Amino acid sequence: MKARNIILAVIIACFASSCNKTPQVQLVIMETDIGNDVDDALAMDLLYKYQEEGRINLLMVGVNKDGTGSAEYLDILNTWYGYPDIPIGVVRNGAQAGPENLHFAKKVTLMKNEAGEPLFARSHPDYDNYMDAHILYRKVLAQQPDHSVTIASVGFSTNLVRLLNTPADEYSKLTGKELVAKKVKLLVTMAGNFENPDMHEYNVAVDIPAAKTIFEQWPTPVVTSPWEVGNAILYPGSSIENDFNWAKEGHPVAEGYKAYMEMPYDRQTWDPTAVLYAVEGGDRFTVSPAGNITVTDEGSTLFTPDENGTRRYLSVTPEQADSIKAYFIERITRIPVHQAK
Ligand SMILES: [Ca+2]
Image (cartoon, rainbow, N blue to C red; front, side, top):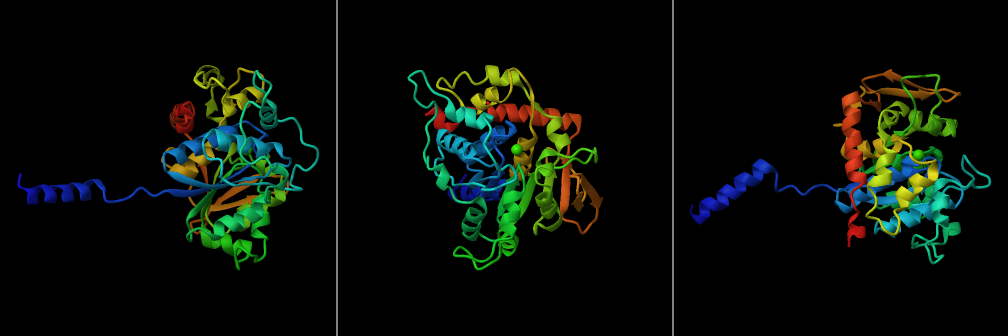
């Protein structure tokens, strides 16, 4: 083939395979009540794996569980996975204000090695001085392109409502609601139950007024992965026992899993399903038509189809559940790049 023809062939091949497109790095924010249930930790693992693959830029993590244990555990995770400077914002006087219980994340922060030193390294151990999450959102969002950020919210909606209610400040002239409308593309929540209206799903029930505000007033599209989705996909305790032996000095997610309940147990993957949708979209799920979601005073979530609505919820067939479960195991058991060095 003559040189000119080779160049032509390459150009044609490029068009055919879209090789001229650079893969888009998604801008993602995680909002978590990590410490209450271990699925938040599995969800964080998924996010770090997407980050190391160059598929996302995790801009910040907001914590909506009171106390410093959650932030300290997230600092451990950020450090262990090789991203020590992902900023963490916290809640003060949130929905679970009061003395902090000895939750699984707190237990991991207290773990020691054989020499009696902390088992896991920290990077920013000034947890009492972490920024309020709803203000950190303003700082971070103000720097992003318009309509570019996806938020995955897998705990209570306290910080997100506080963000909506913020006034203009040093970071942006916009109100919180205006800033969200301008910068955020999509909010994905783990919340609600659309199979059983009598069930008051935990993330909704702990802060019902906040959940009401989010589903009824949040100014971007919202997709929620409800209780029944994560309930259909159980992460196997046998994987925690068998698939992490490569982590000779401890794995902060596997240690958290073992500290959460008596082993072995299989656990629902509520929060990982929300993260999966936030990053990869709906291909692995069944997505409802557009509609509206309301939250009752008791904490039930009700869906009304409406072609002009901006709310949707996920469901899974048994086949989809099996496929997502295998996908989660494959990704979560993978050695992070930072640990393989
Ligand atoms: Ca959670």
